[in-house]
Image 1 (spheres, rainbow over the protein chains, first blue to last red):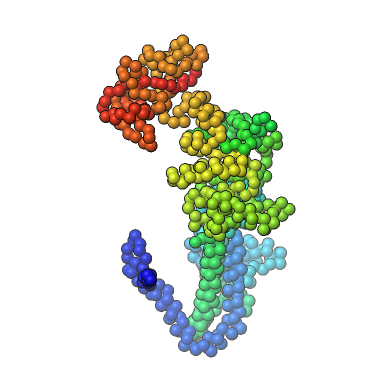
Image 2 (image 1 turned 90 degrees about the vertical axis):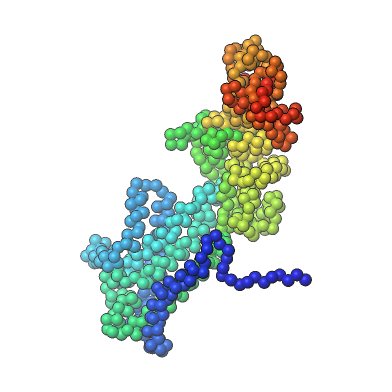
Length: 284
Length: 348
């Protein structure tokens, strides 16, 4: 009987470019120093309160309503940003029109703008006597100083993520697969839903995850438009700042840790869906 | 029926892209059940013609008829054509079986076959393309030749009126090309599917087609069986495009063609008198003694490939003349030789 040699378990794979050990070590060090160490410090600070202490903070009605607001509005805003971001990316890659480059560059503005500037601009636009706030108020919608305002700010800052993640993939779509679909008798709607969109789903999910994460963590652009009424339009990051200014470091760390946990679980879930959809849609 | 009916009639099609004219008033009849090769150099408009037949491009002028019905205004989806792209254009996120079933699944509910029927047809097609058992794979797991076969099965699944192939073997290597060619011919003979394919490869067109249509700069130069276009090329363009040739200055006189005062076996076209160009294929040249030769030069190289001997001769003007001769003698480079013309074509 011939015994098949057991493969040695190793991370290393033969590669053209050398230096696996060095670069892997470097990666871990960086990740550890820059990302994990501060987060560990945060968790350590929060653990000073003990599990029951954290639980008390989490169940505090003001905190839990802020958390619900932050994550809930972020999710809705990321969803809306994904849909409209997809459309923007589609138009920018599919059509040629005068000023296309300008529009394309403008998409990145929310990235570059100091968030406070964006916040003040949005607040003055949507204030009840603002340029957009006044007509909305006549329709009975008050945007500023309500969750609607938070939603608007989050869509604003999330949109570039949604656009930039799908744009390269839309540009890569081979026109011939659409033509192939048409010659096989599929109407435009079927071509779009069965041939064009499915391969883009993983990228759309990535965009959603990034817009969501950005929305959850956003502070500067929101606090100006939100009005920050406890139980109504007070977001969790603001609550952290408030706790800090009251020298309640433990409480701030506790809220932060809770946010960290929820964010991590959400992003993990989105990642798993992505892996599943990649496999489902044949990217091996 | 005494003569084959016309499956597709292309009538006076013209097409201009931006400012460049691609097709000029082109007409051609495609017979039912034939395998027609559209042959031409790149930029001759052959792919555009194929796309216009499919409805992927619209002609500026002219009509496309399927049988007796005017199809010019029909959308791609309504034309029932099978189109195979050079780069396969498979749906990467679908399995092979789903790719093949796509056209059937895309039909309106009333026309859609039952699930079991679709499954059976996909199975049959997988057998036909010799990929049974590959139904669950994804295109990325297949080789180029296999992908192209899947693309063909996908096009055949909808039972198209005509199968259109755009450089179907262009992206494949030589051996796979050869196999696929033979296989396509077999499938065609078995199914009798009217097929038009585009190629810039003369050998491919001549080997595969029932008839060859030679296109050049948006005009149809000639349509005929491979034998016809080779033996009786309609124009110098066709002659040039179908293979190696030598252009020889000649004189038409009394119905014959003379080269350097010596008579050749080539007949001059009626009414042609004076200086003409004689086009000669390598196998129409033969090494000869100087007193019987029409041309002379020195041997540059000589080699054998697959039972043929090919000798390259450089004449006084420095032109290279390819000769295919079977005398079996080795001809050292630098050796002076005479060449006799045994045939050729003169165009009026």
